[in-house]
Image 1 (cartoon, rainbow, N blue to C red):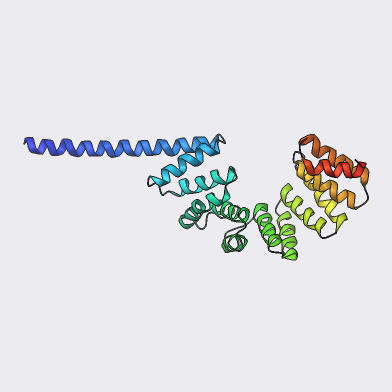
Image 2: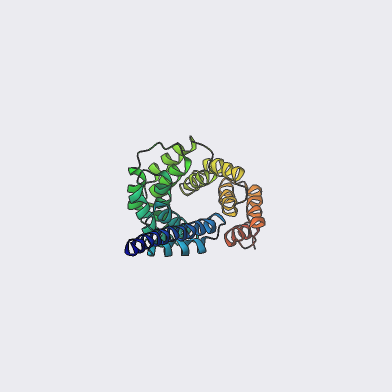
Length: 239
């Protein structure tokens, strides 16, 4: 009888220990998510990677580890985490887009293209076409890049898509069209200095010098240390 009681007590102890372990592990994952949601990405990346090293193999851990490293400017470190998340959920649009973004930032253009174009779900999203346009552009396929941007515009207003299309047209010498799209980008996102700078360059190439000055000054008002805008302004003013 005593031996049986001891076995029961031991079994209960094991159950309690497993329950406690699960709670601790869950709390750690929750802590990592709390860091992420508070934009404390370095802390989030550290906790997620520690959890994975300790055996956590959930999509959530892999995906948010990748996203955390992406957000602190370490796309090469993010890629293996996104790769594991992608293996677990290849049809998850968020995983596909952010995995592709990390690959693009790491200049792995062919792999980025394969991952993005293999996705066969519904794509009613500007960021998909913006990424596709960037990848085509990086591969030197400018006509395909322009087509991707134009198709993306049909799905909604994305200032970065307008900016990238405008920049493509600017580099192609189609200045009037560049002014149109970059002007739209500025209207949609007036807080980005580099978009104002691109807009100013397009205006300058159409001969609209006064408007270009205003655009460069707007860029410097947003970011006083933005050297490119300062150089462009000094060039106009002969300084």
